[in-house]
Image (cartoon, rainbow, N blue to C red; front, side):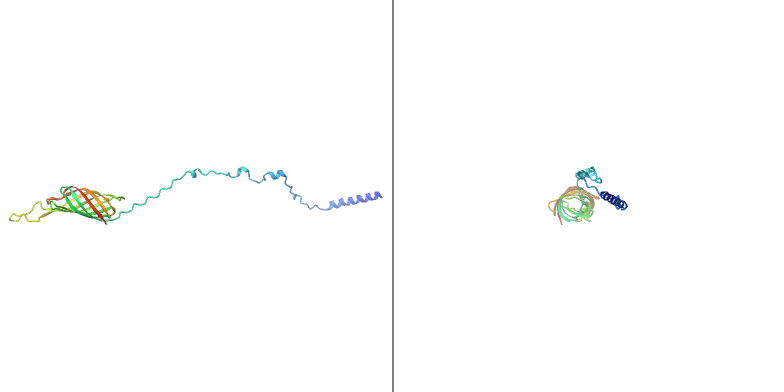
Length: 229
């Protein structure tokens, strides 16, 4: 009886082995179960991680030129303001070969930096009357001191140096002669206020003839007061 049971068990075992050999293996040889990480693997950096030395340094030095303080550029110089034309009138005293008293009227700017002035002077001793027109160059300066220089032409009417007598040998009254002249001047005005200036001037005047007793030739110095409008 025992021998039959053993034989039956052996037969069943052989049949099971045959059935196992005939069943196809459906497992993909390439799909394998990933291994669980070990504590050593968790502490090690991943294979595709960037090396530690490739990280940017925390403190990057600034370029050398950015550390140098730069001087701010100076603002452009504004263009010089044009001269302002102002009319003026004044009175003066002239000292030369004789003392004269006169008036002056003019403009500080006629064109560009040039102004014009008209002088009328009277010599009380000789009775000579002079009229001069001047073209003055006035530099474009700021402040109270206003220099100028110029040239001019004029005339002087004074008693005739060669008076005519009538048939009786008497002098004809009120005989005058006119002498034309040119002059150069240089001077300056000092502004006491915005509308009042003290002026000083030196010059030389020469007559082109000597028909009159006082033709105004000679060096002269002038002091005056001007009122600007």
